[in-house]
Amino acid sequence: MPTLLNINGFRIIIWPDDHQPPHVHVFRGRGEAKILIGNDNEPPRLMTIYGLSKQEARNAWTMVAEHQDELLTAWRCIHGNLDN
Image 1: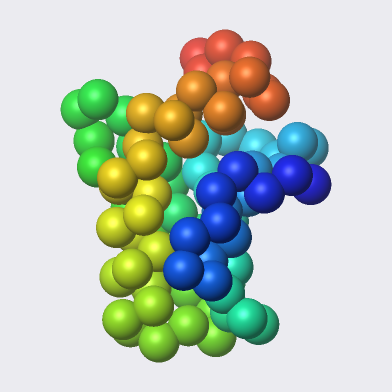
Image 2: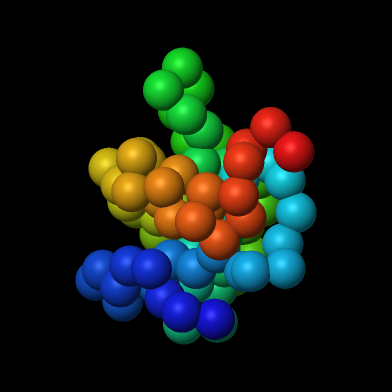
C-alpha cells in the first residue's frame, strides 16, 4: 500500500480494500492509530491506538487534521463516492 504522507517518522496509509467510514492508519515504529478522517463539518476522531504513547497519538491526530482535505481526496480516489 502506498504511503500517502510520511512526516517525522509517521506514515499515513489508506488500505485499498478497507471499509467505510473514511479513515487512515497512522504508523510509527510498531505502533498504529486508526483515525476517522472527518469532513468539512467534523474533525478527525481517534478510533484505536496500539503501541503509541499519548503524545504520539496526539501528533498523529494533528497530522490528520492538518491534511484532512488531502486525505479525504485520497480516500475518494481509492474508494470512490463517500455515500456508498
